[in-house]
Length: 571
Ligand code: ADP
Ligand code: MG
Picture 1: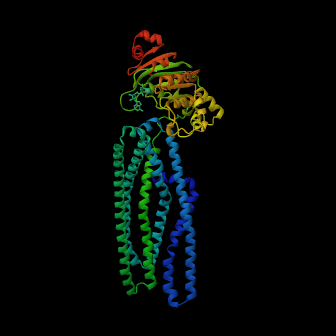
Picture 2 (picture 1 turned 135 degrees about the horizontal axis):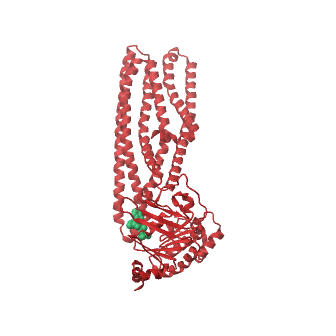
Picture 3 (picture 1 turned 120 degrees about the horizontal axis):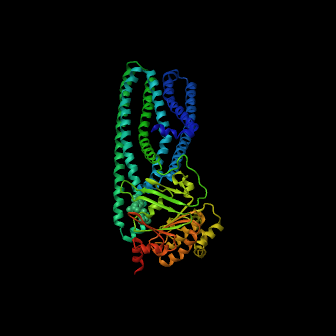
């Protein structure tokens, strides 16, 4: 774990060494004051030599001046080191999140992941800076102080040191307790974020059902849990602070008693006595510091552990080393004995075999939940098949480089996701960097041109979060415009017009018909009127593909399709 953490320091070796060196020197310079006092009291004071005393003070000032500079460097450059590492980790995490597969997102909450990105990494930055440096300085100052104390009087020093192991044990004990608590706390905070994300995202549903008080209660549960964990952490902290405080004060009193006795006994001089008392404080400082690190260190480590959990999740679908980049595919698709399930439950698809010619339009019909969407999700490898294989133009899709595969497939779904931004940005998502002329052309073909022209701001019209400011038909047309820009050889229309009224649907059908020209098209539709033009109809039921053929052919067979047809058109 620690080794992995330090690997993030690698790009900033120089910064780290600079910060570290300054910190060490600054730590050692702290020892200067007791030494100076010792000299002044024992040598310069009895001699009554003012010039020398002033010189000593000037020297001390110089040391403090140097220390100021060093502290500046440690504070500023050290934090720079911390934020650099934090930024790197955040970037790596974001990059990794882009790669993780659908199944990961099926099983994780958006708000929780956001919490990891934002809160957890914040704590890491603090530790990345303070962790190693504080610990090291603390140890350096501790050792320096110990040596000096030993040089003053071995017996007195050894008596004082007895307390060190006890103090360190307390530090370690509470550290462990705190790491656990902070981990829980971050989990609780992530739950709060997930709750808020869910609530705000669904606020329209909440208000439509008038379920605000129910939502409030859910939120209060999360909020209360966080408070309790946080209180627990404060309690541990308070115990830690109090225990170490009283122990340290015991040491001070102890040194005062023993020191006085040693002075009376003429074992040490006045100057040495004062220096020893001051050194005791210098030496307790680092222990206090180690204790303070206890506050930030467990937070950082807990955050880092949560970070690693995400980073260690391998993308389920990824490129094989021998993956090939494909240019333009023809779009000849074959499913060969494909079986697939989402989890441990029963398989959704069992032994599906199907061949689709390049340029063919195939319609999938069948009861809801039969697996039509699932069949289409396998093609862009949102999930990988459990058994069997899928090939495009004779090439197993697992051998095709993922990015190039997905560039060949366009999907229009029932609910269109728009990014908050302008119409231009959202349409151009189909082809990043598309010119305005291209965007207008795509809009025209998708029958969106009129709407854009009617808007005062035209393409710069803001669509609202997830496109709330557009109607269902407008969103669907926008999605189609995106596809005209993307221009993929394979097209999947998954209930693309199911949510629309029949009039809008009929209008959009025209655009869709134009869009599917010259492309292999997989259409899923539950309104059979929209698929009459398909070259072939494939009926998918829980038993798999049960019928396929032309419209007339299937009506003649008198199976599932004819029953569906009758149900829809008899009324
Ligand atoms: P259709 O599109 O034919 O209505 P789907 O392919 O969406 O059906 O779903 C087929 C089955 O797979 C359903 O029983 C559904 O509950 C299940 N399913 C769909 N998506 C997921 C998912 N992401 N995780 C787990 N099960 C899923
Ligand atoms: Mg579906």
